[in-house]
Image (cartoon, rainbow, N blue to C red; front, side, top):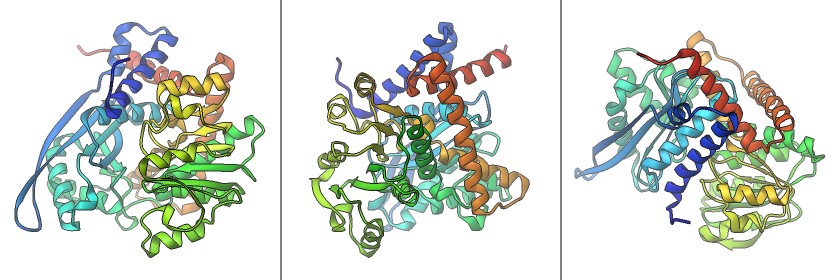
Length: 425
């Protein structure tokens, strides 16, 4: 097999899954290629001024994958490992995600290749403003609506909102989601992706006699998604027995004290391994993979992509894997899981709570309304439940694993839209 970097493999995996679903549906080659190909890929130069007064330069991307069903929707990530191919792969995933959830949106993703931890607040602001200024012709509530992703947050989205609004001469809250509540953001957005992943775990677990109460869960990643998934699963009676982040992995068979973990992190601990909440079972990035081999009923990979390859897949003891991250399992790992009878709930459904809440934020912006947090959370859960009902029924009917079933449903939705709209000219 040819050698690939993880980012190249992410794109190869995404394209493979689209093609596999298209072939299962019997789509003609021309339509499959149309769906695989991004609508547009923008690579932009980002010159900016350092606090020292010196000039520096970064490279960023914005990809519109498919906009047949609605405006492009997807996050902006800051990470030193961001590449063009990774951004394309993530945009493909967003197209499938919005189709699975039956949201009137397309798929997009953006990224800038740098480590935000090395920049001051002023430098971060200047970087995102310059990036947005290059994208102005392609952004807008009916064109492309960014959101937070790895390395970005509500404050970054506020700068996106302001830069775009300044360019058109009036405030446009609907141009971005995941923004501060004071600027038209939605309550419940911060927890939405983790909430959706926990609901996916509960719904899939119920199908195999694995209720959340007293279930042992192991989570890789304790950022925005993983931390909320841990808290919300614990609130529903689950026991979080292992956690991992860039510092390594910890384990406690009796359940990790999440209150202690959060307290220590607020006090300055740089990793879960420094919190004293569990036994150290692995140190550093390599040690973070040890979280997958502990005795657990459910594993939730909530960090970056390609976390589980075919080798790690052979070590997993859990009955259910719920993908809180984008693309954490490689296609080879999927094959191992299927052979071993381990159920995988794929990212294009399992972590769709975030984009679902973003859609609800847009609805509030367009209608000039503000829903309370309980109402937003209930709507997210309701949409996750409706989508799972369709996914599970189709999986049983077609005798397909959830991954392929989800891809087929998403691709069919997009393909039907292409056929109905036709080609111009």
